[in-house]
Image (cartoon, rainbow, N blue to C red):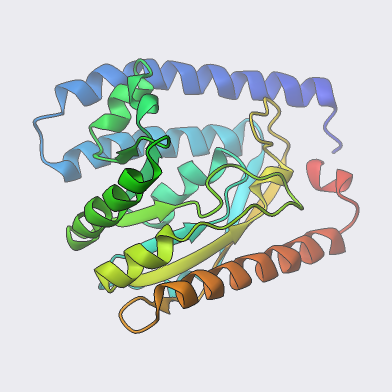
Length: 256
């Protein structure tokens, strides 16, 4: 069945309303849970994540599939270097790699309700204007979070990049991985094809997420970690695009 743009817009509005309502509920709940152990706080926040993914799946008809799950280490946490195209991956990664810690701009924690909830999950909140200090913070706090058994998520391009584009990859990922001597998991996906950067419309279809083989932060130099991760991610982005185009035109991917 072909889904028209007005219908997609209505379904996207329902998702936005569900996301807003669940955020208004979660914020105060997370503040109450602040004294609780981290696993309880993370579990409560993960209910919000799963609810929003459920609304995406049932209302917007936007699903996702995962390749390469076997590459995720089960006995050790580490660093995730992920392509950043939309808000979708910030949800999905929390389900695929629990528990995760995000590196984000410190001003985001001042957003009512959502920022309050995020603050209780102990993210690595940095001042982007102070680049040297931010890098030191990412390495110092990131190592501590990994030692605590959490996955640190880093978007190496620093911001959301539209499909088909490639940003400049930063160096902090390799430095953190080398310092923490941890596995590095590259992740590629095509979420931006269905949920654009700052986009309201959530197009139906199936997002493909690919988890790559781990890189060894304990033995590889930082520069080599960054280079191999970038090469794998960008190569896999091309492969994902080719696979998605193989089923028909881009427009047909947004139909049910």
